[in-house]
Image (cartoon, rainbow, N blue to C red; front, side, top):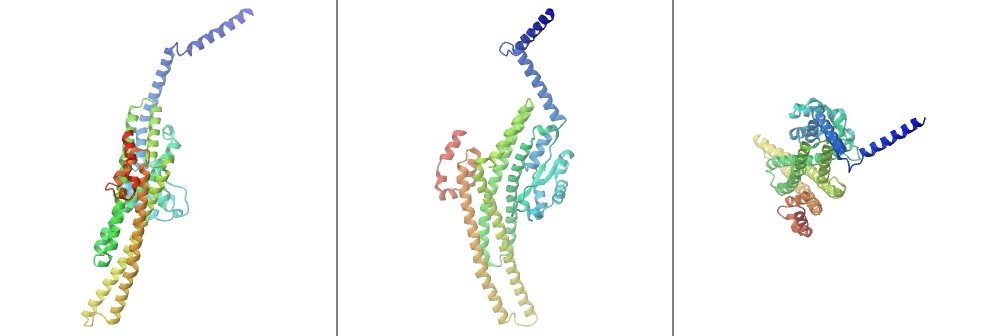
Length: 408
């Protein structure tokens, strides 16, 4: 019995010595090196499996092409197909209709050549509907992830992707709307040149449209290159150099955080984002006001053409071109058009132009104070001719530029 007890104590003493020996970090580096080596080998193998078997890079590039609007032909074709449906109230949209349009857009562009597994994951989602929302406000693309790739594309990351998509989709819509505005201006400037009284209104439309085009083009350049392309290039470099899965996860999170910040989606930039969305709303208001004016002007043009045609018909029949009664009626109609439609339209365009310039001016002031250097330099491109700088003394301050030089 005593021998048994002594043997047990000896065993426990031996175990204690062995455990202490294993975890004495300062005295035994071999064990730590062994653990590090095993960890690195395991992580490297896990990363290789993620790349080879689960096609991690293919999914990452799919996120860039679809949720970050990198597939330009697909996004443009999708907008063309969705334009009529998304103009409806959000409550009138049906997912199965939008899913069918998505499939049509895929088949009609280079997206059709993507891997079938990727295309199966691409889907349509409708965001929560608020009163007054149209389809443009609630539409979103979605990408379903499952299995091991969810280790990188976590639910939190996917929410960030959807937030960025919503921002990029709004900005891309403004580019799309302004392209339609420009087409209408070109078409109607030729069509309505026979009504010289409209020249001043047409000039107002062209001037305001040009200002908006410049703003959106510069903003899109900033988003496409300084935000997405630069961040994407850094992410690809880090993923290629990554030795384990943790490095990939960290690089991906940094990428999303950078995009969120520079797209004004972080908490600090909430005021600037609100200002930018107000500018977007004014662009939509301008489109609606201009379309309404063109519709009225075209109606006037048709009325004048009908009057001229009637004169020719009566003359060919041997009658007077017009009677005094007909001439007086036509004169009253034209005077009414000149006194009601043109002044009200000019006033509406002037108010829109002033509101737009005020919003842009406030946006520039807010951007100049932002902590991100690339965002601050956006103000220089937007106000390249210093039009707003002459109006707003705060834009004269070299503080923003000085800080930017220090940071860089």
